[in-house]
Image (cartoon, rainbow over all chains, first blue to last red; front, side, top):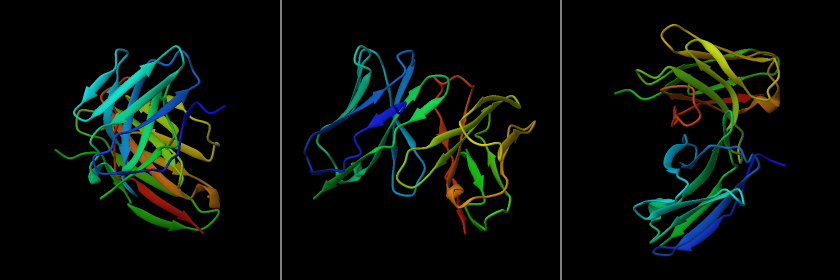
Length: 107
Length: 114
């Protein structure tokens, strides 16, 4: 079983739509969780950390479910500029990345 | 302020050759991590260095080695290159070595092995 698994997508959504996707992790002792964004052929950049109580950053909402070992990302009011691959990152003794979920927002 | 800088940005090698990739962390950051990203996959952890000591190693063969210098810059070396080593090699720096620290990535070195 992979340490971090994500639905690869792609999720094709119209501007203004809401899109949500999950990531599951295998190590129940994992302590920290993040979402990174990666544009085509660019480096990953931190989108947001994920806190136990859930957190929002503008149109982005992240949730953590420790019992079921998954984290989620929800994007409201999608913009064309949200088109990217979203990487789920889990910290056990190192940072483990999922393969990414591709989101394409169309006009 | 300069971010994480990596060199070279692109390079082409042939099987069996050796490659050295370089990374300069953000000023003040003492931890450097190396990741390999093959097309269509997420970054895979190779090494982490903190204060010039190896603090973590991923599941990569001994052909991969790294070191960190007193100025906190780092080199990743790969010997006896294979076709499968073709990938984007990402360097990331953070203040400390804890996984709770946010990683800032460089733009990467794109290696093609022919």
